[in-house]
Length: 400
Image (cartoon, rainbow, N blue to C red):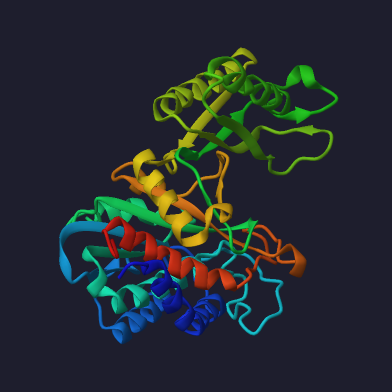
């Protein structure tokens, strides 16, 4: 077959209503990270209908499905979708609005899962057109540490068979539907949580000489910690240190508290510098508090690593994207300091993580992910399922 992209697009159109119905069911029945029991059972029911081999129970609720091409090849490609939702009260009013109050697919994981299931329908129909194995991962817990990817890797998801490349897709509201975004090399940051407990001696604000002021101490610690970025980090390495939470218990406007708690995030794109920065953050916070007669306990919760898109694989993926979507619809994206646990895969195997345009400014579909009004232009489902199937086949030599 000379133009497999035409065939894949036709299959994507054929399965669009099926993919849409899957997405509607998933969106209406979201489950939080590592609690995706009904979601896993629903996915398994679709895989049973499809008649493909799969195993379940990965990371508790995840699944791994296999599609083998009929041509001769030992190559293995991995496709991944995440299946968990967020603790957000949905404000959309649609036929598929979340029925689980306080939980919402606000990051598009319902889209990722339905697109991968759609891609599997396409690939299963076109097994005669490619060789090798496509390993499809339905992964729990992307939104919560330690990240389902890290757990599945420990459980052996990258073994038996070992994938030569991993491909992941994510919704992107800033991109209009019909557009695809990619970036080679460094793409997304590592993400660590910084938790500090500042201790001093509380008392009346009118008698500060009798106190060890934890609020002033906290302010100086926060200011001093910005030196980690401003004067210690190589300016060629992207990074940010931000604090979003500071509080104390009890007290009043005129009471200096005994204890102040501070929480923030540190993000960067260099693993060696990341570990060095942890030491600097700890030392600066402790010594600043000590210099003022108090103390500071620093707890750094190590999160997801940085996400690296392997350049040679990403170049091949981009070429395939252009063949499927057209040059004008494939957009190079900037580096972002948000995080994704697909990064764990990218640390172990050649990987490419790209963005699916889901926005439509004319229809007002512009809400960002992680908001209660997030939704998509559902034409993206047909594109996402077809493109994922085509990229897998292209990597395996299908239709060439």
